Image 1 (tube, rainbow, N blue to C red):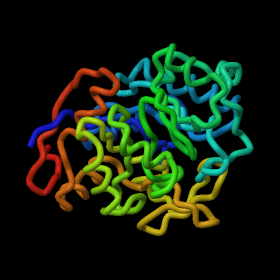
Image 2 (image 1 turned 180 degrees about the horizontal axis):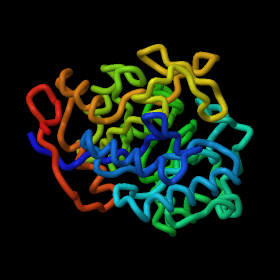
Image 3 (image 1 turned 30 degrees about the vertical axis):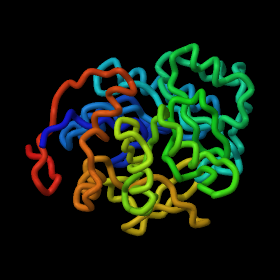
Image 4 (image 1 turned 30 degrees about the horizontal axis):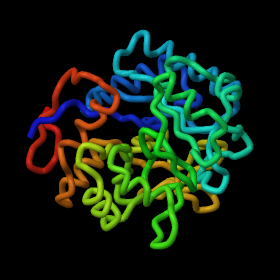
Length: 292
């Protein structure tokens, strides 16, 4: 089986590199490591932080991107979220969803913004006018103007047979893309099957949401102002909140493949979502391992 190179549109780092604290050379070195495992492009994802540090790290990532074609833009996951579904994010840094607040960190290299649509105060329309992908996440509501849903099922109002919810809308609104963390920890197999059955196959985007601790020697690290512990299976805060994944997409694809749940479209869809032309391809063996 052959597919385009993998694109990570939502991950916070790996091999000890944290996009919220990294230097340009760190990001470039990470890109080199990612290429060796089949990841040909990525959107460094910034977690909630101070306005000052977000601005600093945007410049860091832009500086790295000048020397690294694999960096496709920034995914801003933080600061415009709902405290009720904050997950690992530090809500002390959350801001109202206004255009003025976005302008405090605005940059053309921000390509994706995750936000809580139920709290919108004019930001969604502004981002849409700018051509930024708007994704509902860390929220309880939904809005048909969004382009996608961030890590479906996680950090959002779940499915109920009464009323509406973010997760329910994600499944039934066909034109909206749905991210999903299929690492075997964040979403059960039955929930994955429900997603894959409900959504058009061209609207599913696999993400890792990988933490900087991924594929490093660390068993604990500070992330999003919280101390994260890795027990060999999952990474959690001191209060037990599951943080991001500790696997990157090639490993997640192998997990899905062994369960009979992988579809090559799930690699291709991110290219369509961002109107990106493939720059290479991967060949996989029958065990869903990349043939080098």
